[in-house]
Length: 232
Image (cartoon, rainbow, N blue to C red; front, side, top):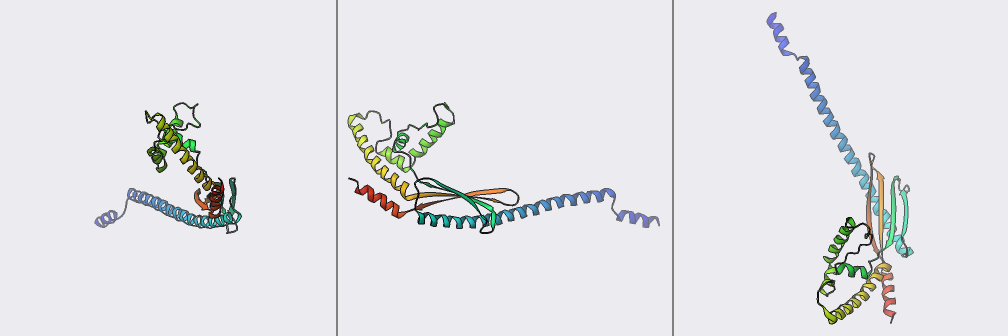
């Protein structure tokens, strides 16, 4: 009898062993539940992102068609709404249609000559304003247009140019300004920038993204070029 009882006790589990097993099982269940919840959230986000992308694509097609039918406006246009007609009233949209305008030629000349346009910044001293101006100047000088202006001798402090160099630079600047003005007017009349912002509720948090499209009106471009060509 003693040997049988001893064998029975050795084959069972103690209370500490049972509690330890339950603790391990509980930790594993917590990790498993978190993993399942994360997968469900990711799948839900992917589902709503696909729906919002399809709705944004269709809305952009409608905006482009409407813009070409009604023609380009001189001022900025804005509009907002939702996709309740498509059955998704929780998905909101906002659109801004604006002309494409290049900066003035004097601003470009200032950047090409190494003089960053402070704009907002004489009162801010040597803070972030001057740093932003220097970054803008560096980006422009490294661009194709900035490099072209530099090669044409319009990069500013060339040192002892003299009267002939000054006259040559002025003639070059006058020619470039006339061509730049032409491009500036063509872009303003013939191109519109459409910025479509989509906001939707993914179930857990709000999401949003932007879609940008440039629409060109060939008739408007020809109209601008024709009027400039008719001007003596």
